[in-house]
Image (cartoon, rainbow, N blue to C red):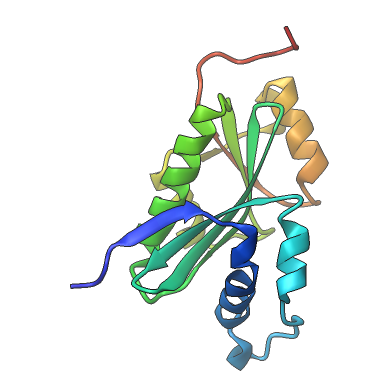
Length: 170
C-alpha cells in the first residue's frame, strides 16, 4: 500500500527541496531547454507566491503555487509527479488551498491555464468545480485579477468560494 499524501504550506527552508523537485519534474530527458531552478530562484519566488507541498513517504510529489489579493486567489503553479496517482495528489493540493482560501475569506479561485490546455487538464479542474467563464460576466475585482495576471490567449477557470461578493471596499 502506498504511503498517504500529506499537504502542508512550504517554508523558506524548503527552497532547496522545491528547486530539486521542479528540476526533476521538468524532465531533462525530454530535451527541455529550460535552465535549472536554483534555491535562490525559489527563495525569490516566496516573496510573490505561497506554496503548498504534497509529500508522500519522504519525498515531495506535488507543488501548488498561489497568490491571494483583494479576496481573489490565483493558482499560478501546479506540478505533480506520477509517483502517486497524480489526480489524488492534485486534488489534495487544491483541496488544502481551497480550505486555506476560505479561512482568508477569499471569494473565488482563478486558475490560469496554458494557451492550449489538454482535455485531461480541463477535465481535472472541471471535476473540482472549476469552469471557464467569460471575462465580461466576472465581478469587477475578479476581472482586475485576470487582467493583471493573464497573458494573451490564456484561458482562466473560476470557482466561486463564497456567495457574498464584495464589489467595493467597506
